Image (cartoon, rainbow, N blue to C red; front, side, top):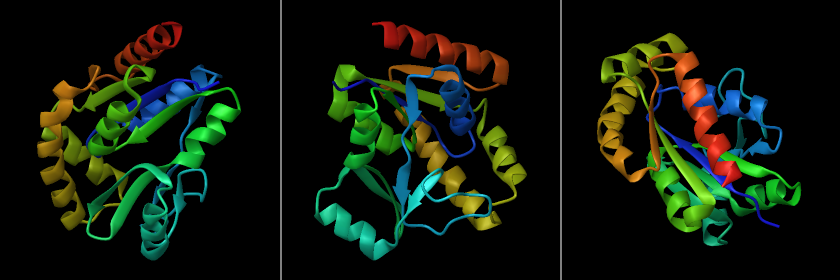
Length: 188
């Protein structure tokens, strides 16, 4: 039997990954969907845990073979997407799927799965907060931060299309709000 889907989307640096990791630790029946991407592995990332790292040519081949439930070319030759096989793998284990995806991917998933999916948009208190968080990561160049901030300003406009919007200005508060939203959705 198919489970439910929980989608967390946000601009880079808003805290969606931290929230998703927290929820996975609190809900045993919720399993993280590992996305595929065409970018290089970053320091500390693990294949099959953080992402399925596949090259641009292989990614395009899988698009042509209709292996993705959603995908996007986020930046030139930087593809991200959700493999159909990943959702099936999680549902076959009797679990619900939780996603940590970009805004366009989140809306694509919500459109495809409708009421079976809860789509949550995470906002930082301000664009300045996002920029500060990206700088603290230590993984971004000045150029990539500027690109991500420019994209974030556009992504914020999509928040109204999500089922819920959480403002991540206090980690304890946002954890509680996210937990309540997910618990209510899973019981419905």
